Length: 543
Image (cartoon, rainbow, N blue to C red; front, side, top):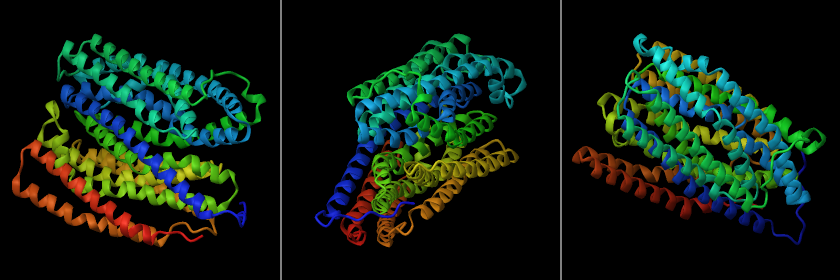
């Protein structure tokens, strides 16, 4: 571990710290705003699928097959690619400029996209076995046809694995340049394209169809349309890469380039880090498919979980990664410690209001989200239980993500790997134990609990390793924790008033939505006021 460097006497350490703090906050807001657009579109996509397809086994296999390429992409590297690659790009930019960074990107892309192509081909070859894992729990009369429909969908969506790889390189290139808007906003175009595809298919073939009613042409149309939507996102990400001066073509030669070879080895060593949550997600999808509409309920909970996480703690972690990488490369332990503490403070601030609001209003939120064919009392209750668990899972997942990024910025690949295996073991153990529960809300809520348990175990593992890495620097500040605690308490009276009004009025859905939005805005305002006017005084760091 490097010793802290001495700050020259003619430099003001507070100036650089304040500037970096403002940059982290500004970038976090940018990520939040544009991610909000993408996540709202993603949530709308699942809601529209549920409203048009309903709690059917056909909806199960479409949703399961539709998310499969993204799951495979995440297994091959996925979001881990940016975490591993951004520090290398930042070092190349600082050391030799954009030409060297482009060379590094091109050689790494040549190798990783080649592996993604193999993954797409492998998925096509294994599509019968993969499809069977999704339909094994279906009733006998529809199982065979469901299996064939799932194979058709997989064959048409498999190329998305390579396209998602292209998107990931575009995101890494842009974020390494400090550009966060387009990488966060581009997925919204994909979601809009998918929504249009589902609307057209439902208009042509009908809504609420079960497996024995849906024609093969409908599944082909869904597969082609959703793949074209990913093409649109890839084009946008490449345009953003061109705008930041790092657009390049994949090429060979990584073995003869030590920096490229090191980056690729780090990416490949980190594959298990990406694969563990993907395996968990695949398991959840397979188990939830045993209940009609179960995949939709779990995936809808997942969308809310990821939306809140990326709008909160994960948004901060994405914005803070370039600064963490620069601090780590400077070998200034104090600078890294300040970056970690400030980033963690912002991350918890971003995630705590969401935790409190969703946990408190899970039932009315579920009532608002269930529309069309999904508007059944049992499904609403099931969704409410899943959302309440997801509220806590988004905080645990965000802290795990931020701690993992901090370790990656220090070129520590082993810590995230250990944490991922710990989370996988805990999550899978709980997921399979839910098979002993009835195939209703109890099983579905249990599947979301496994996400919470896995993320909690992973975050504890990552934080423990990171604490050892930054000693003797302080890990957290008491002022930070006190500020967050006071701000959270300030929300409780507003939340209680919101609950009382909902109980008293029993409003229509539109009025219910207005009350929830008003309660959320006022309680969030109270939270931020405490942080702004009381918290900042308590959290001032000493030079």
